[in-house]
Every structure is written in structure tokens, then in C-alpha cells.
Amino acid sequence: MTPQRAQPPGAPSHRGSHRSRRSLVLPSASRMRRSEDFATAIRRGRRAGRPSLVLHLNVVQNADGDRDAPPLVGFVVSKAVGGAVTRNTVKRRLRHLMRVRLHRLPRGSLLVVRANPPAASARSEHLAAELDVALDRLLRRRGPDPQARTDGQA
Image 1 (cartoon, rainbow, N blue to C red):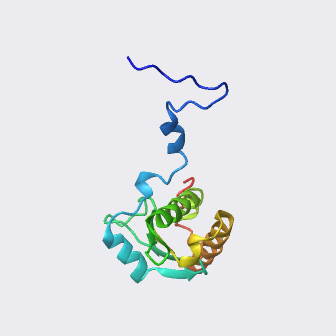
Image 2: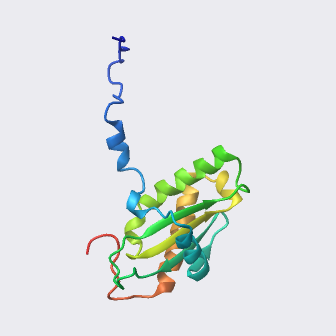
Image 3: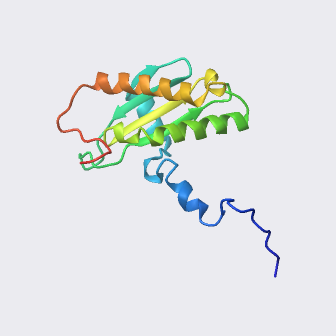
């Protein structure tokens, strides 16, 4: 039996911490993984650029023709942004920022967030502001569609 270390009073317990962190990440169902989805979003989607990032949005319908599929979000962070640690940090920050903006995306849409080299040194607040401006531009350009449902409430 291994002895357990004494926790200082008021220290957070690490047991069950994976459950509390789960609500802080982009849902697994909304993560883009297939290269075909990335290619579709980039080639056929609309683009909005900012100095530190570029967004590509494509609203597609699934094979059944309905819009019940959740929006998918993918991230592209090239070696031009920095080394592996820097790229992963940028990806984590962008994933966290997109989690709270996911409800704004139309269901069935594909969004690719491509980080430019300035994203490596940008503060999270700056990335959030640029993400909001680019996302607003893409969603406004799309125009109102009365039958389009967002990922929020039905």
C-alpha cells in the first residue's frame, strides 16, 4: 500500500477533475476529423480573414438532406506559427474560444479556423475579438434563413 500525500487545506482534489474539465472543451461530436470535411470547408466555404486567423465556413446538409447534424469545427495551425508546443497551445486556446461560440453556428455547418503566425503571440482576448469579428462577418454574409437552426435551442 502506497502512502498518500497530505493535501493542504483548501487544495483542489484531482479526483473527478476530468469530469469538470469536460464541460470546458469542444464537444467530441463537434470536432472535425475527416480530411474531406476540411477540404470541403476550405474549397467551398466562405472566408473571413483577420491578421491572426482566417475562418472558412461552409453550410452543408448531411446525406439525408436535413440540417440535424451538429456543426463541425476544425483547426489548422501550420509550422509557420511556431514549434510543436506553440502550435498545440494555439490550438487549445482556439478550441476553448470556439466552445463558447459553437451555439452561433448553423447546424450542419463546417468551420475551419486557420491560425496565422501572429496567433502565437496574441493574447486570448485578442484572439477572441478577432474570432468574433470574422465569425460575425461570415454569419452576416450568409443572410437570414428562416429555416436554419443554430446549435443552441431548437
